[in-house]
Image 1: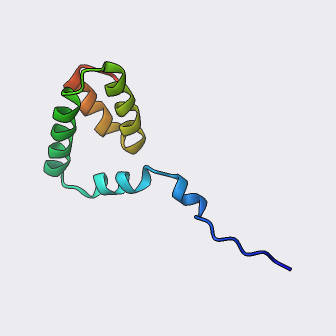
Image 2 (image 1 turned 30 degrees about the vertical axis):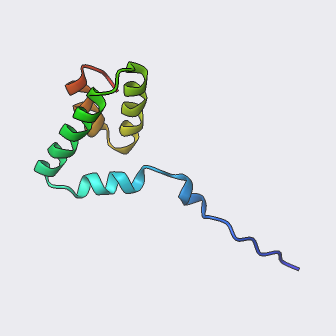
Length: 77
């Protein structure tokens, strides 16, 4: 007898593909807007460790995105 189990596919464990596809879909102007928005929001975070952790997550989404935001914040992803 085969036991059926309702579970999510392992692909649900990957969190960055959709964000990468979205960023790649944007025009250069829209990408720049996203970079500026992230830069502004992260500049309001007082704890540098948190900013670095967020840049590391954004680096998984798209290295260009993380580098541009890091440059604006004076940090390296």
